[in-house]
Image 1 (tube, rainbow, N blue to C red):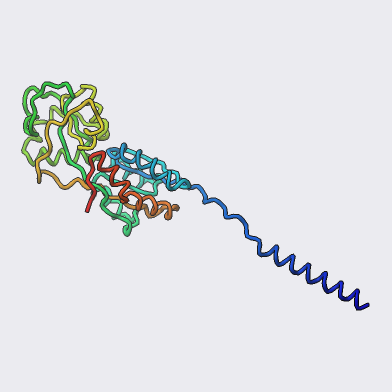
Image 2: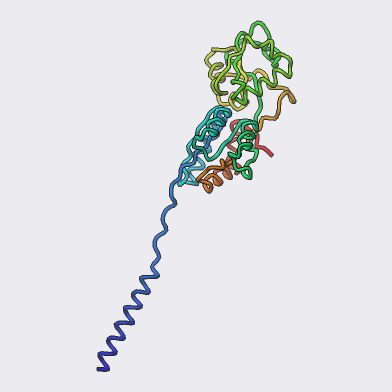
Amino acid sequence: MKKSLWLVCLTVLLTAALLAGCGNTQKAPEPPKTVELNVSAAVSMKDALEEIQKNFAAKNPNIKLAYNLGASGSLQKQIEQGAPADVFISAAPKQMDELSDKNLINKDTRKNLVENKLVVIIPKDSKLSLAKYEDLVGPEVHKISIGETATVPAGQYAQEVLKKLGIWDQLQDKLVLAKDVRTVLTYVETGNVDAGIVYKTDAAVSDKVKVAATAPEGSHKPIIYPIAILAGTKQLQAAEAFTAYLTTPESKAVFEKYGFTMSQ
């Protein structure tokens, strides 16, 4: 009887130990969930952002970046109309200010990212003799392209410079308006216009154009690109990771490679 009781107790103890051991078995950690991060950004950042995308993906394989590139004013309108966007990078504070006024961005995440310059470009093989913006009024210049002044920050900066120099009215019959700054670049590359006003960074990515003149100091507001996370994002952690990555030394090197200056 005692032997049977001892066997029963031993069986109970072994079973309990086995169950306890099973309870302590740890599951293998699940791989992080892949998320898509929608980034609406000024098209003038295209080349830099595409290179940064590759670098970011190598370090954050679970975050898939989806870029929506265009004129900042058009992107602003899309965001106001409910288009999917987690992060916005504008080519001017104006568009970001208007989204901020409507509480569509997370104001605590807003910061100035990079800065740019405004230049006059002409086709690489052009014989035009342009050294300054005022030379655009000359009779040998027939067509000049700038971005739409209602929606394209580069067009707004161009208008500001031309008005400051007192030649805006004289150029009205020569102006060819474009939907974004990269379209201005294309018009000049293809010779459809004699000259165009774009960012320094746009000129830097083309071997079909050359810079004829740079906007004088004080002729326009500083060209600042602000960035912010949208208030309605459902991917806050991923958005924070991406915006933080854009200020790393690795991203700084890419931006500077394409002609941007980091904001202080």
